[in-house]
Length: 505
Image 1 (tube, one colour):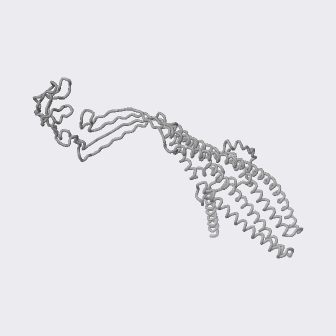
Image 2: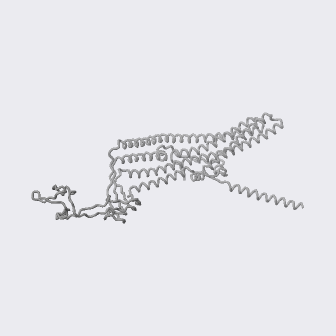
Image 3: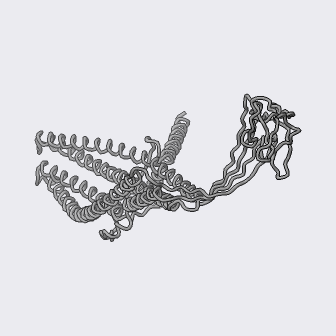
C-alpha cells in the first residue's frame, strides 16, 4: 500500500507538472509581441482618419478624370412621347374657293363667262361692274367679283393627326473656346489630387507620432515598474533587517516605523505605475486596432537598457520647407485659388462651341404632313458673349484674388511656425541628450552610494535613515535615467517630423 501511495503521489505530481507547462505555453502563445515598426504598421492600417484620407484621394483621382472629359465632345440622346387630347385643324370651317383661269402670265384670273358681273368700257378697256353697277378694279377689290362656280375645301381635310407624337434627337457639343475654363478645371483637379496626397502624408505622420509616444511611454512605464519592484524589494529586505535589529536591541522602533512608511510609499508608487502601464498598453492597443484587453508585450520593454542610436540629422530649415507636407498642402491650395481666379475671369470672356444635332419626329412635315418617322440633321456654332452684368463678374474676380492672397499669407505664416518648430525640436533633442549623459553619471553615482550605504548599515556604521536616503536617491536616479532615454527617442522622432524626413513604410 505504501508503494502504491508513493506511485500515485509521483503520478499526480507528473500530471500537475505537465498541466503547468501547457498552461505556461498557452499563456505565452496568447501574448502578442510587437516592436515599434509593428505598432506603426497596425496603426496605419487601422486608423479611420487615414482611411478617410484615402477615400478623399480616390475621389480626387476620379474628379481629375472627369475634368479631362470636358475637352471631349458631349454626345447625348433625348427621346419624348406626347399624347394630345385634340388634333390640330388649319381651317375653322369648310372653305369655298372660286373657280378661275390660269392666265398666260401665270397669275390667277377669270374670263367674262366665269362671272355674273356686268362690263363696261373705260378708255377703251373692258372693266367689270359691281352689284350696284359701279366699275371696280378686281385686283384690288376681289370681293366684288360675282363668281359663277366655286370649289369646296372641307375642314376635315386640313385636320392634322397629332394625338400621338414621338420625337427623338441625338446632339453633339464640342467646346472650341471657353475662356480657359476647362484648362483651369483640369489644373485644379490635378492640384486637388496632389493636395489629397499631402494631406494623407500629414495624417500619416500624426499617426506615427501618436504611436511612437504611446509605445515609448509604455516602455518607460514597464521599466519603471521593474525599477519600482526592485525598490520595494530593497525596502522589504531592509524592513526585515531592521525588525531583526530591533529584536536584538540595536535599532529603535522609530527606525522600524520610518522604514515601514518608506515601504508603504514605494508600494503606492508601484501601484500607480502598474495602473499607468495598463492604461498605456490600452492606448497602444487602441491605436493599433487591437482589443483593449489584448495581452501585448513590446519588444523594447524586455531589454534592460533599450538602445538609443546616435542621431546625425541637423536642423536644416530649408530642408523642412521643401519636405513638410503641410507647406506642400498650403502651396497647392494657393495654386488652386489662382486657378479659381482664371475660372472667374473666363466667365467674362466669350465662349464658342460647335454643335450638331439629328432630329427625328413622328408625325413629320418634311414632305407634307405624314404620320411616320422622318428626320434631319444640322450643324452650327454657339457663341456666348457677356455684355453687361452690373459689375458682378468684376466683384467675383476681386473676391477670388482676395482668397488667393489669404492662402499666400497662411503659407508664409506656416513657414515661420515650421522654422520655429524645427529649432524647438532641435533644442529639445540636444537638451534630452545632455540630460541623458548627466542622468547616466548620476545613476552610476547613486549605485555606488547605495553600495557604500548598504555596507555601512550592515556594519552598523550608519543609521537606517541614511540608507533609506541612498535608496531614494538610487530610485530617483534610475527613474530619471529611464525618462532621459525615452526623451531622446521621442526627440529624434519629433525632429524628423519637424524636418519632414520621418521614415515610415
